[in-house]
Image (cartoon, rainbow, N blue to C red):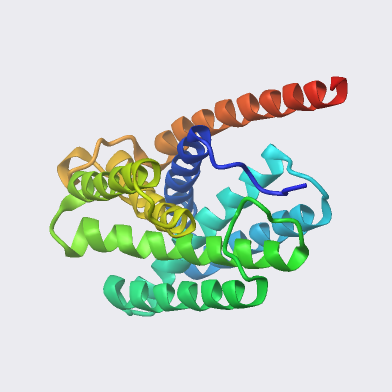
Length: 249
């Protein structure tokens, strides 16, 4: 039985909600609460390891648990990226390069050992560890890319979000209407939803004077958490309905 979420439209909506919430919640902890990037990263990595440990112990897909792990990778990725780029002074471009290299290494080892990068058949502990390592790297990379687009490129929060959103739309088009490799397109889209979430999260939280909408980290996090909870509840009900149908047949 596959232990991770099926790739549907609701998956991508929830992924964007979770990664955007990861951006706003990570900033809430490290900046609004003034805990700092290093301590925030330690706390959030701890939460990630706890949720991941539980996820590895179960033998089937649980929507609440799965999206909890996604959310902790996203929040941890936000503060880790900020720590690398700002505290260590690597900058967004260098940070993105380092994280992209790490992600490619994880995917290369995964593909070599498991002979596939498909996410529709994650059944072993080893495959699942590669899966979550790739997600942690991609979410951390996405934060650095999003910050680069919003700050260094001159596009601003809205411009960065529109650019990444446009590329994601092109990938969706290619997935449905071309014969390009679906696994490659999935990972490209998965990586890009994170910078989309990062730039969209900044758009929500930053003040109007800074080019944002002024909801703040608290208000934005509450809005996004509510949306994510609604979709998770919907997926739990769908999962239960399918289980009942399987039992009857």
